Amino acid sequence: MNVVIAAGGTGGHLYPAIAVAREFLKRDPSIRILFVGTTRGIERKVLAHEGFPLQCIDANPLMGKSLLEILKALVTLPKSLWQSMGILKKQSADLVFGVGGYTSPAMLLAAFLRRIPGVILEPNAYPGMANKAVAPFVQRVFLAFESTVTFFDRCKTSVVGTPVRQAFLDSAAPAASRAEERSTQHLLVFGGSQGAKAINSAVIEALPLLRSMKGGLTITHQTGEADYARVVAAYEQAGMPAQVVPFLYDMPTVLRNADLVVARAGAMTIAELTVCGKAAILIPLPTAIYNHQLRNAEVMAKAGGAVLLPQAELTGAGLAQTVMQILTEPHRLQSMSEQSWKMRRSDAAETIVRECYDVIRRRHETSGSTRAL
Image (tube, rainbow, N blue to C red; front, side):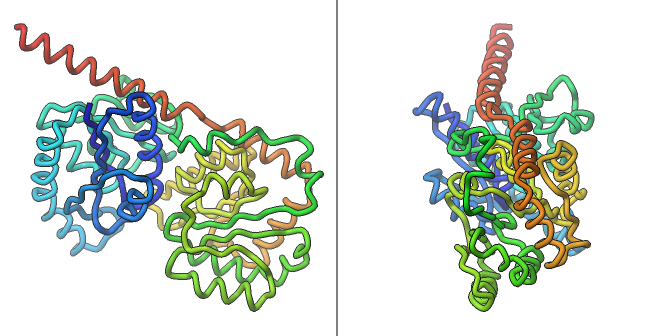
């Protein structure tokens, strides 16, 4: 069987797709999987590390762009569709799986035109334009949140959660006495695959206050490539030891070791936090399309697993105070971890792959019936 996965641009689009790809291979190691993305996203770097092949098409984003950029994106649509048709023909694809973003529409429309089954995953609490646009052309819509069902044909939807890589699923449930027993606590800071300058700046401002916990606090801080040198220099100046890195490849290990996480609120981040049962301070990206990160964060905060801290209210002093309040109140930290754990969906990838097989089977049965007529 041949599966083509259209995903890329950001980790929020790419990593759920990787989890699904791994589940396909777990079920049948002979399956051939090809990722389709662009040259601008993180997919080349990440997929080379993960061992999956990548083919690129010419596709550009539409939402949140200038008129000139929108026109450029529209002009490239016919070319990206033609490229997608060629890829599907060459691959003899049996299924196309899309995770939103600007590579999905061309691939899924091409699948529809070639009568190849297509499915999509919408991992956010508010769906993106790409998935809403291609939904009429696919056979199944997988959702992470119940709140998004109303945006799609209910007959096609399955609420399954967001797929995470197997390594995250090895996490144990939060232990009742863990917070009290440990002499040091670990803070993880990350702003998504490309980092977040606003979060980096707030942490830099917070370091003089966090020094009061120096003996009992360790930090891992993922900065993004562009801000790495600035953040390293700030920790050195503050005399605060930390592991500062531009990118985290082994997020499962790093996240398992964290007691508290400061992060954006992308769908993938929420899924990974909850599947590991981690308490978090969420700072949604204010420029996210449809403000979907705020909606994601609100879901986790309402459940009691996170504190929502809008970027407009973000200061170094406020961030430091929130971090210290949570880490110095073991029962609060424990409660947040437990509520986060209760949100976890550990079978999303398995459910998606099982239903994908059902979609393929139904298409083959329909094709067989048509030929018989």
